[in-house]
Image 1: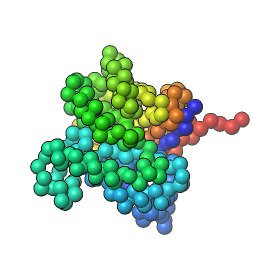
Image 2: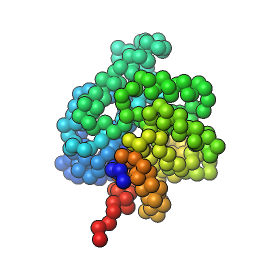
Image 3: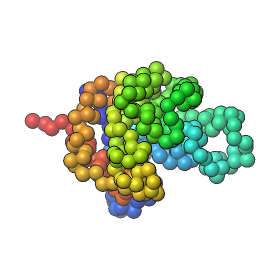
Image 4: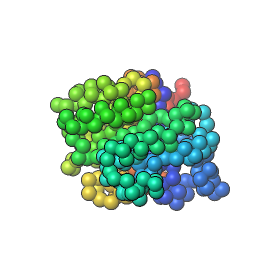
Amino acid sequence: MGDVLVGACSWTDPQLVASGWYPRGRRDAEGRLRHYASRLPLVEVDSAYYALPRRRNSDLWVERTPEGFRFDVKAFSLLTGHPTRPGALPPDLRARQAGGALLDEVWGRFAEGIGPLREAGRLGTVLFQFPPWFAPGTRAERALEDCARRAAGWPLAVEFRHPAWWAAERADDTRALLSGLGATAVGVDTVQGIDGSLPPVAPVSRPGLAVVRFHGRSAAWGSGSKEDRFRHDYDVTELAAWVPRLRRVARRTDELHVLFNNCCADAAVRAAETMRDLLTPRRR
């Protein structure tokens, strides 16, 4: 069975910092990351979606974490077709017209920013999370091909928010598409039974890495504020129901990343620690 790494989708979320999970004396930037890395072996850098990562920060992250720790980095919004405010761009790019030249520059700076993580072997994957309107079709497939070409050499993972990608009649085609691009298919856990609900699949599209992200089961998933959409406190029964499926995935991959995105106080890190314990074989 492959290695299973469990973590949360942020170590800097304000609600987590305010929750008391970080002990006194370890609440500065360095102390938070060192403490987090002493408890969990994996984290997602969600801040890279909102602003381009900086090489200096990546250098510090490498310095403050042990060998074997992994960072999954979320791709910057512009790279996945999400609306991007000019203020989210570096100051020297804000006056540029949207288009190919700007996109090329942003890709280059994103690559530069995550360089130290790649060089140190700490980069788990780069997560390209496409928006809910990114529906299956020729145009989407061309965008995915362009993404894979630009990210050649990176560990690439793709998460879809449009449920049609993983509908029963299309799931095999989606898996084959991502496999052909050398990309990891990201499975998800979300609330069921509302418009836009994604099926709770855990697909394997390449043997090197599988990723499953737990977004919580809030009924406000498709309509509320960010805090409302991701507010959920997983109980042990909900997590235990996933354990057989995750173990099956781990048997088919070299490494499985399980990430919790239910960012409400310390709910994500607590769920991550519980899932880690559930997945750890008991000694006889």
